[in-house]
Length: 613
Image 1: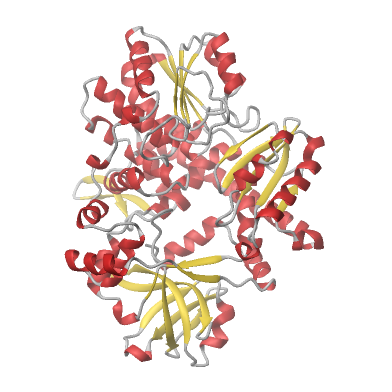
Image 2: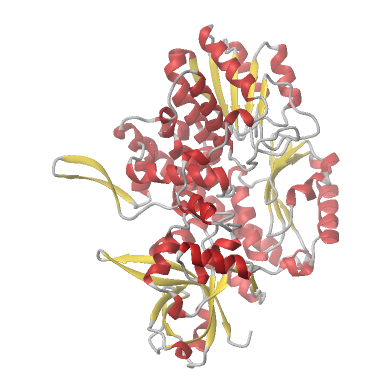
């Protein structure tokens, strides 16, 4: 859960500066409040009885498809026993056999990964484990974002061949590298691919292709991160090498960071992996992560009673991994070399980690400056073009924009105008772009509809990358716009807030909060619940804080509730209506804030509406 200070840092990390919100408000964009489907009444009643919880908690569980005592136990008590047999994944036996062969034959192995957080954590994970077997016969390779582009590159294959690497383990990329794997085979370089993106019509002819999304893979859980697929490979390999499972659990911090940063669902296996990864990050963070957190002002080292170790201002959450750790690990690959991020994650001495973290923090500051500048330029392009303002998509191109931050800019513009967005720039004689989408709209399918105009594309439902020849840009823009306009429904273009359940303020008991905290870790598929409460009234002590935030002091007269504190970021435009003393409705997260060593409850208010709306 976010504290006020956490939420403020989240706000800054996302870079949603005032310009964006002013623009959104000027367009009169209101959020739609949508109540989620409630749990079956009989299931809710039975759960409340067998778990000895109130019906609100039981309803939250039923919404997450938890309908029995045993399922609730598994949800509240994640355990390694809930992980699936890695050999259920197609080609796992081939991948393990090939690595063991490389160990036995003293071959050289190259660990290859993408330049984002999922890729760099994957490389650090695989390299850490295999180094003890390959010693000096192992290296890692991260392609240059600008020189080589996304995924497996010809330059990377040439590097492997010229330096005598017999085997390449590719992580978080490769599922569409059909021609490149064919080229590698000609160079007598074997590949094992560990990916989690959607495959194309043809799979690459690698030694093994591990990807739960390949049509012929019956693995029960389809939403692993790239690092998660790498971890499953190590699960099978370590067992085959006679090592206990505990020999790889020390790598779960990397898996948790990848899960958070890649925005994969925190359900099923991901929930277990993220749960134990967070425990590791909070109890025994690796030097590189501790150094990063120091620069994020979340952690510092101090000596107490002669012991030198990590001290955290508060418990780390998935949100910290998304908004504090992820962007800093990403910054190296966006601005310079992603290999520095891998070195940071591999650092075993604090002094070395601090130097790398300092340099990466500087790059992150440079990245912020760049993406703020480009976001402002992109917003101005829309403001100055009436056609763009009324379009159902945003497709913008500027050959001078920095390739490393266009994905962030696409996210910002999606937040502002709330429609499928593609931001494009020029790179290596091609137009290269990043796409972001809105809830319920599959931008990958929309891009796939234009695939004959593209040189390359890949990604997920809500985020994708693409490249095309400059002469195809206008055709692509027209066809993408036409496809989206024909498919998307008008109501989808209005931001939606999904509300889990309606609460009275008197429903928020200490027991309710204690159980609610056990719903964590929160993330896609298990978001922190949003509650709605109607008929709340200002005590007269609410006030504007910062530039445009409301510090709320409210109560609910109809239930004779006590007074609750809340924070409503960037909602100062509601203040005049609130201070009239008229009842209003709020939707909010519940969080525990800490101040001067004491913990107190706070409502993190996402939106405010008059009572009759």
